[in-house]
Length: 272
Image 1 (tube, rainbow, N blue to C red):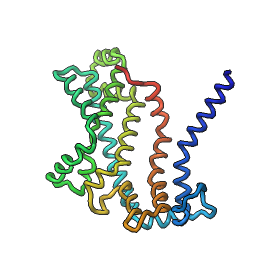
Image 2: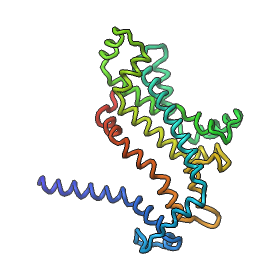
Image 3: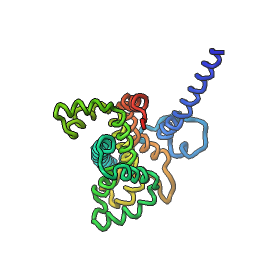
Image 4: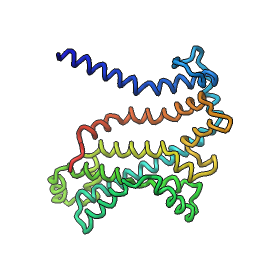
């Protein structure tokens, strides 16, 4: 009976792995096909003759150097800003006592229920009146704080024993010093998780950069993928090349940070 359960578990895991990896294999295989092969229905994942020059053609078809520079600049600044604001706000809601704390935190949580599409037009009107259209400010400032990240950090700080802060207070440690030297390092896995989510959210953003920018010099990589779709049709092989190039940094980032991500998911948890 146990052997049958183990076999069934293994079969389910393999099936899940295949279902998860197949889209990526299809993307890589299509990126090496000719346009005719890519648009012809077939069960073949990889072509008989790989077209490696597709990647060269893709990089020449759009200024991906500019796109990547803009994307990484915006993503790193947004990630740093979200991490700092989440650390400070999460600590304040978890450890400080001030009037209206519960109400303010409830309002922040309520913003998580508002769809992005609802805030799209007000945000666009605001940046237009501020003269930020087609600037880095428009791509960065509206996303420097995140309600979900604040919630995660609050829960992480609430999981720390109060004795740590009491001992630090006796030694003359203030809130900022305690946050920077004691509390912050203790919740490092959650900090890395928040930073990872912030980076991926900014890196994968499409609608807002498409609305807030209008010149090729300010475009990001996700908008650059739209270069391969036009009135004449979609260049599936080059589009898959571009997708493979764009997804590579996020895959590398996940493998580099997965240990902290798993630690935060399994160790820290979400405590009330």
